[in-house]
Image (cartoon, rainbow, N blue to C red; front, side):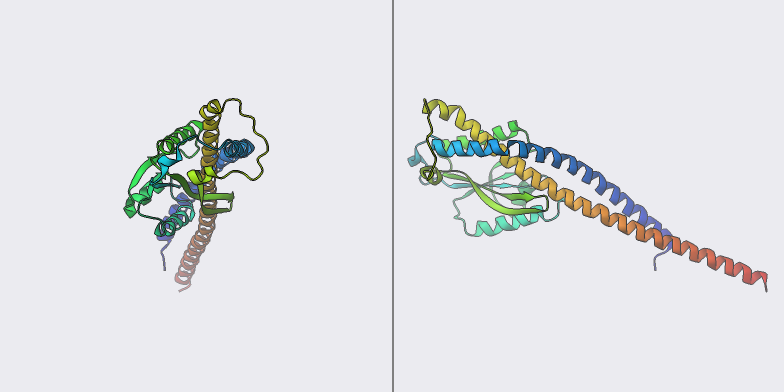
Amino acid sequence: MATLRELRKRLRSVRSTGALAGAMKTVSTAKYSRLSSALQAGSEYARCCDTLVSMAGGLDIDRDSLRGAPALYVLFSGNRGLCGGYNSELFAFFSDLRRDLPDSCVYAACGRTAREYCREKGIKLAYEFDIPDVPTFEDARRVSEYFRCLYSEGAVSEIIFVYQKFENMLKQTPATSVFLSARAEEETPADCGTLFIPDRKTVAETAIPVCFDEKIYSHLLSCASGAQAATLMAMRAAYDNAGATADTLETAINRRRQTEVTAGVIETSSDFYK
């Protein structure tokens, strides 16, 4: 049985853990609120950009140059742990996916935990990206421009994202999404209406790159929202558990003190009546 000193020491430790979890919960709540607002505000614009890219035929490149080029798989993850099964479920999905991929595929990591995972598993990374917890449009533009250059130069035949698809605060599902692919660009939408493009070259040089930037930005916001939501739920559970454990320890300490006081009183009174 633990002594009173040991119980008090454990109580201090639990309270410190609870305070840390509460602080992280507050930070995650603020970040998630910012990300959710930005994602909600730009979702319709991102959808329109995606439609414009599909109708315009994507990037104007020589598809013959892409023959024989490897596919690029980009692993998106959170920057930190303490987010429940968010990263572990993603890495398990990615590990299963790699078993069926040819050896010619190349890989990239976006996020600190993805980079550390690949290094730990001996996966050679061709590219690495550091994205903040709350990405900006400039971060998205930098990533988008890099991917578009790789694809336009024929270094890769397609670019596929591996990430946690954000469903809601309680649910994120590992998934893949094609960002650029020669096969996808060859497909024509079944019903795309009429698109008037006065100068296709101008559109390809100005409008289409911006649309790709917006697609990447929306994707980064979605991934970051899922990571912060998972962190928020994990820290909320840790904070609640710490509070419940602290209450249990306080009750045990009070009972132990009361027992010691009662035993002292009984011992004193027995000596008095001897």
